[in-house]
Length: 311
Image (cartoon, rainbow, N blue to C red):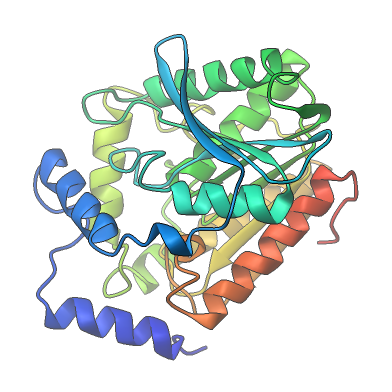
């Protein structure tokens, strides 16, 4: 297993520039660096075409609604952005939301959940559930088919998608599928990949320690709303799980896919050996990342259409 050459070049450029680790410094400094890195390379003309992007509120919770050009009843996807529960926003990750809307022909609702450490667990979980309730109540206005609601996220966002899938099952809210990319699902365990890929591949083992400290606050790592891998998963929505070979969270995602399968949940696992965390937001950086995005989105789309994926 070798690192994708385009990804290797990207990491070399970061090292040459002396870029600090993503989770170095204060939360404000982290957020400023992320904003500068993304908006410094902002090219809206390269975003996938959609019908509209609208900022709305579900009570006090900010949401961004991305409507596809496609007409007629369509899937509705609740999307949770990455950023270690500490950084990121619907605005900064709108390229991902727009691409999902375009490729799936879906209305994508991107959630601006509250961020840690100012708002530790369970703030983001509460916001995720509020967003799901809003989507269900607003499905007609969104042009959605109530039988084709999906949940999607990457990294911390995938954690929230997984937790929301469990809550949806418990509340009797139908969910057609969940897309979990590079998920963190078990804060109570450190898997071998956290050491194997713990330094030099963008997300580090030290970063994971900061994320854990900021997000958990006084929370319990064994709480299933923190670590969905510890929940009873029987009956949750079918899942597509994607992981990268050089991600410290690789084994976490693989283990979660196995846990879903043991619980009888139709689950497809896709492993991309040469990629890093967070590859789903890097299709422009690497043809291999682009191919992974296409494959995972296609598999998720089949779940939204009622066609289960093979493991």
